[in-house]
Image (tube, rainbow over all chains, first blue to last red; front, side, top):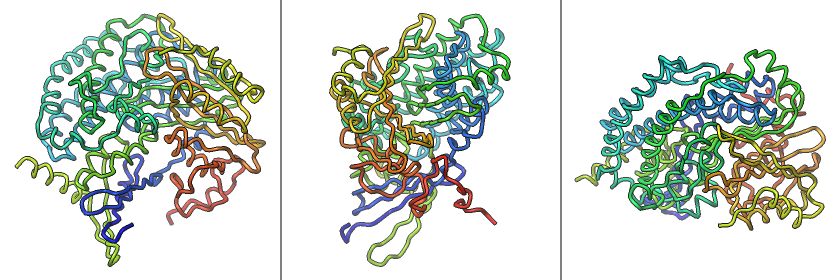
Length: 407
Length: 171
């Protein structure tokens, strides 16, 4: 470290959020020269807890890995167990699973868009996007009874059916988002000041995304066409032509910067609306569970032996669960991987050579499970005096940069 | 681009690694009303030739690593590498799950970060949690455990007792 550089640790994050994490930056002037990532401040040992639970109990544990991906983790876990034990899911249940997952994607992407706008200092855009998000939260509550942690998934199907009366209500939501889409696109993609702050910022090249095994919109924004729904279609996705969305579909440009990550997410909201529309119009008749009696299901799983992998494209990227059953109450191995895990390392090339004021938006651009930065400490290496920067002060730097650019 | 089918992939691995392939099977699942197929290839290789298996995969298509799942069976430490190739094209992706068994007393394996740099996080996690030594992985600080966590305690080993004593409790 040269004498002119500073160390700037940012974090740990507020403990009430998932995956708090510390970033140790080395800063020279206004530029970041290196960054060291230190997550693990809130490792909850969920896989460890799973050792003492039966498979059905683990579904609810998996649901609580992440508050926003609370359909994605149980989806992947159920698929892993079904593959390991050879359970077939009725088609109607597959369609309901996809409807819930895509509603979750809409809610997650719009939530993220609001947070990104907030980090840049456009709070009116935050209010607008979260207002648009309320519609999807309402429909999730109507269908599942909850705004988060839906409790819909069960091994071999889903726990609640979608009734005839609910279908017109879902169609109303679809219409609402078709109308709102143009507004979202105008606000995020046609706005010159958002473009000024996000174009050519936090670039992740195609090669870096590939080498670092990045997932989700983060990798797709760099041009890697990777999407489990397309590459290895499962569930009801196999009946639809889902394509991985890359930014060149919008404007023929793939740069891998923060702007491209916004493009991918905005387009994916519209893609999700189309998927839900297809599912609702083609919802098959029939059962929603392969085995209704939980005790009998647990009995079958207790005798099962085998390994299974369950994958699902969550809003942030691929969620993958690995389960090994060995004729016991609890699985012998349960490994869950959230998308942010693979998107940790891409932060390093993204943040290198960026300005301190761009830290909030670059970090937010991968849509980590961590949304808020708690505090930052600046250490002067000459005097070893500590200067503590609060989250508000860091955000103020970001907002000031936006204002400077707008002048 | 030419795509291999899973059978060809397994025979290529067998050709390159010969008797180092202990076991292999192809799991085919069906999805959707049209019952479209997708494949999981499960391979168990000997530790010594493990890296050659990854090199063989890399010669076909750049592999994506999802995670390494670790399992302490009491006799050995089993690692299952969840990889995939041919992503980017509809219905073409093949999941390749490579299992390696390591000696429990002195578990060590070659690191693959020179081939796939993205494997660093998961290798560091397995190193901390199960005490596997990855040859070629730089010595870095703990990623998920606290920095000052005892060096000889591995929380995900099944015989690890008294873990609760390591947890700081609020008085």
